[in-house]
Image (cartoon, rainbow, N blue to C red; front, side, top):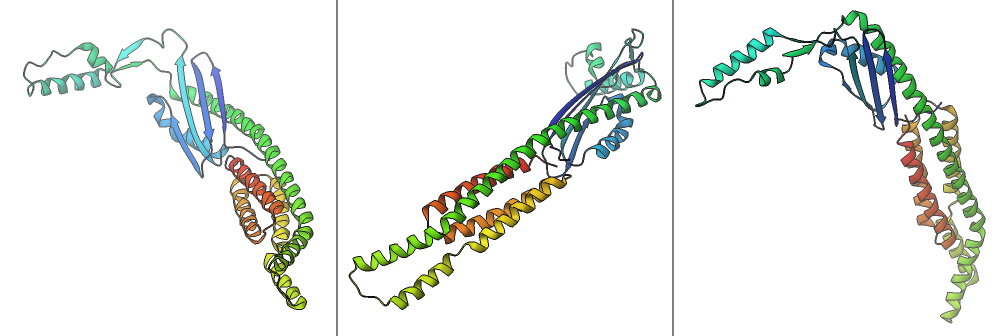
Length: 288
């Protein structure tokens, strides 16, 4: 199975204590880069969440957000962390000695300080399991969305490979006529110059030009690379980097073939091949 790195998932869960909301966004990246944001009171569980995510996602830039709401009215009552509040007040009073005409300390300013005011919270042990289960469900949704996106990318890439084979067929069909046209142009040029020429020497020159412009080897390798790419797609898994490597190889053969040939039809087909290569490469960058 092929998975895209680009997807979004949201999962909500509620029990008698808390309402849990997980939001996960993933985009393409060379490696797994995880950004996890959880409420301050759940920081000690962050490593647990990270381990779960890493077991379910192989690659991509992942932004994961957790929000929780306490659902009962008692839990929503606000309490003051007196230790933190006293430390803030004491610090402000010390600073006031260094400032002339300093303003009085506002209780509202003290309350704005982190951790001074907080909600009554449930025991972490009682909500740890729901948090983990909700995260797992969110990751299942994410991976299902990545799977669907991967299937779409697979269809797009497969279609581009089929189009590449059409261009290769066009080139192979044009090769004999291209060699003949090259000979006709050379003989015509000699006749325009009104010079006599040795037929045997002409044949030798034509043989040299044919060898120099022979692209049969490149065409064979192009076909081999395309078949290899199709095989990689059929195997599934983490194939993004392998596809990118195959596109580099196909592009190299296409450039060599294009440089050797002087036929307009072959040159046009080579341009189409390069366009298809870039389109596949762009799509492959979104695959794991």
